[in-house]
Length: 235
Image (cartoon, rainbow, N blue to C red; front, side, top):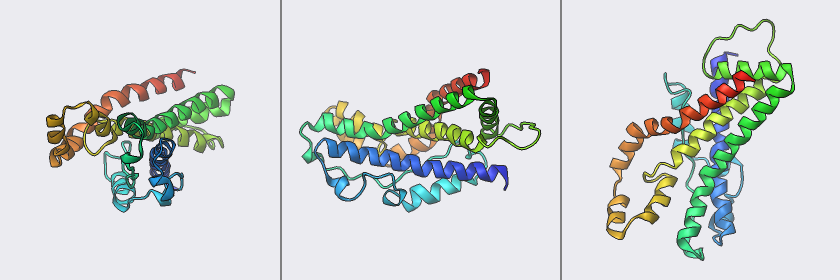
């Protein structure tokens, strides 16, 4: 099978899991804080079928995968988790915690992926080769390897792409632009008059997300990816 196609399929599978983890974490935290709306709808689950949005989970990501220049920065969204804030005891605190649960779950997943990669590389020569080749392969850098790749290579590639996709989702969702998670947190900091303007940004917010969001995400993501690459390639 074509190597580039394998990477794309891995990315898409990871995105499905990452989006499911994100929305399930929102639902779980809301349930813990008193709102059972999402739980009753079966959203406290990692089953992608419960979270899939036909456009945001399927059409947009697959389009990005097969468009030149978008392969590394795969993004998408799932069905929003329904939350009834009237069920919260402390509206501001509980709304912020429920909102943060999504991005934090992706950040935690990215950290776990990076730690397992480091452990995998440090425990065996096959693991070391697998991780190094995975880093180069994911970044579309040719690597001359004699013979067949170690059996651990698919796992290493899955973990490395898992780090990238989950980190991207975490940072992207924390942008303070409606309707992203960051806006739910930021709006609690605004006075009433400013809040009305902020909530009506609409198309302006979408334009900012499309044309500015990627650059802002890159300011935080690129150093993190570079740092992990340096660690993995220096072990």
